[in-house]
Amino acid sequence: MPPPPRPAAGQHWDPAAYAAHAAFVPALGAPVLELLAPQPGERILDLGCGDGVLTARLLASGAKVTGIDADPQLAAAARGRGIVVTEQDAHTPFGAEVFDAVFSNAALHWMRDPPTVLSNIAAALRPGGRLVAEQGGFGNVAAVVTALTAALEAGGHPPPDPFPWDFPSPRLLRRRLAAAGLETVQATLIPRPTALPTGMAGWLATFADPFLAGQDDAARAALRADTLRRLSALHDPEEGWIADYVRLRFVARRPH
Ligand code: BEZ
Image (cartoon, rainbow, N blue to C red; front, top):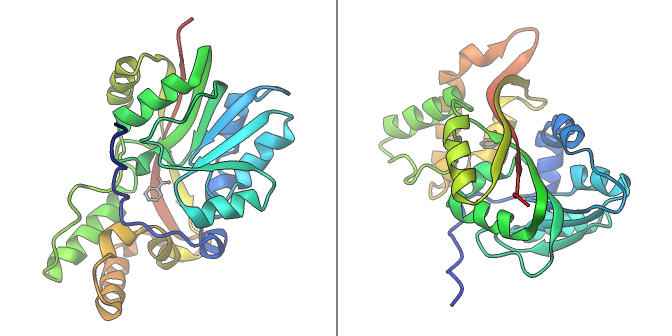
């Protein structure tokens, strides 16, 4: 019997809002694409392809690309860019198709059970195939998490349990990759202070559902306002809001 689908982290996605507030996510994923170096004709799976902005660049390289995303609206947006998308949760095996490479940008930190997802990735790769990915790493958005948690506690609300995001260290990631049967080629933590085009309010509106779900509109507004106040040190009068992103960029291989 297949395992039951893992519960999502309480996040809701709106492709229009994502494009307005979070276009920097695919834009800053360009170095991961370069690391992948897709070749014409290669079979590539984009895990957590989202609205397909970066996936379309993979397609333009001449690779045969399939996207996977669990969110129906984001999957539809990616299909609108001409991308073949399997709408499914990455905790469920991906099927019989075999890939030369699996690519993932800013998606793996949403996974509730990373070892299961890494096993599914390993099973989908041909022997010698590669996984090239970037996700939030150890310490990612620590100030934002601290402020959200403090705002919840001050309002008498419990913080989300389990913690909704996965930000592993390189050491933990290497252990997980090995357990999934993948060899780590490289795994690097990269601090990347990130300017937020629509400010921290836009970031919270786009990404903070796991902390704010279950509250009524008034409580959500109050929690967002309190979080912004607690994060004032991340606001520069000239540069605007800068989020304390830390990326974990890595390459792994399925042995021959
Ligand atoms: C990230 O890309 O690091 C991220 C985005 C949303 C929530 C948490 C982390």
